[in-house]
Image (cartoon, rainbow over all chains, first blue to last red; front, side, top):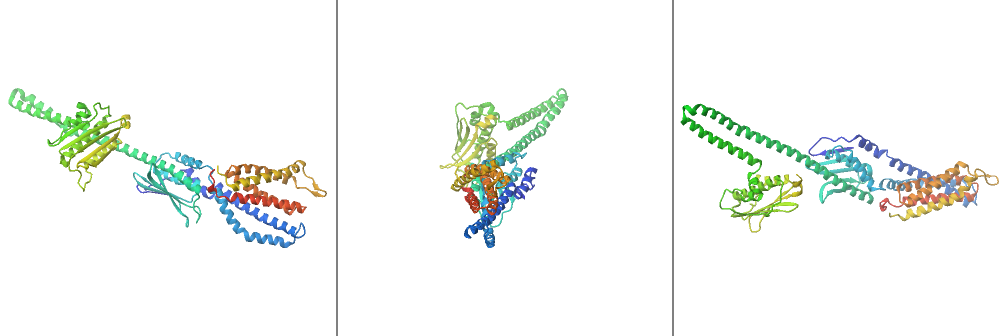
Length: 435
Length: 127
């Protein structure tokens, strides 16, 4: 009855037992169906009885107030009943169905039911909540066909309940959260050639709002999970890199030093000249090891940040050319920023300067750092040639975007009217401070 | 609450019908079985009890219809249909034509209530 088409993950979700039972019995044998049929046939019997009673009584009037009119009055009553029973049945059927199915005493009860069904889901993933949502909407509104298509990070996913009846008007309601369309809800009328009522549409739009919020939460949950995985992966990659550097670089250097010291011990008395040569080699190796350690430490956190602070580090960023002048504009008293934010700003500024030197043919660049209570903004502007028409984001720009996104920020690259480029990185301060 | 006019009329009709009927039914119920005229037996007690119950349920349903509640409309439809069904024997087996006419009026009254309750589209209702 429910089919799910996850474009990325083809595993079919399992419907909880309770929901499954409701779906099986919800449409065919529900109390509403029994009530509808009971009312229909009860009123039809009452109608036939009423016609018979009224015709026979009218016969009594016509025939001189007699109680027992001629037999053909009974026949007349039967003819009237037979002639009118089908149109009356059709009219009653429509009216009673409308009363039983289309009348929603309390729309909030339907929304609440949706929430309760969603609460039953152990994990709020798209694979579990979409079948629950379509099943709840179909069961509570007695709709024969409900389909939701939603966009998730892993791709679009479509979940369908039932099938659309022929000659029913299709209806599509966008699922929106904060002006962003997350997906769409597709449904259709309950009966051929009969569109959904206004109360149905109102309720569906209310439900669509709730579904939009739910799907947005599921998307956030998905993104959070992916982010966690990225974080763990990045940490492991970083550990592996440090381990490799220590093992392949510093380790052999120290081992070589130990061997050279052993050789020096044997030669220092017998062959002083050779000892001096070994000492020279030792000094070069120690210098190399020291450089390795510096590089390792620099990769972990730029030492300039600890030495001069963020503004000082920006002023002292090393440029590989003397043709580029630079100005740094920053608050005199920079508030305390989280270490991750300082590193991100420093790295982005460094990357931006590196790009200016390599590609912009600029003579001047301005670094502007602005920090208020909610946002830290870095702006690097140059007077170079700007971006080429066939510009494609390279590793440097992607790296800047990633660094900003990791901290909930963003990077915008704007061409300047007078030529050159402006790279603006914005970071939220609240989240960073919480870290 | 936006009550359709047909529901207002139906609720008034139900209350009028049930109050008037109660005024006639209550003495019958209290008096018990007996002759309504010389040589003519009155309705059986169980029929009076059923009628009395239906009348009370009818009043309850009138409240539901007035409040534009789905249960009220449903109950009113059931009571009106049962009112017709119990009214037919009264028409057919009535000893006097006058009683038969009263029965017919009751049946038409109930039919009118059914039509009024089924007439409005629920989408015009904001309950």
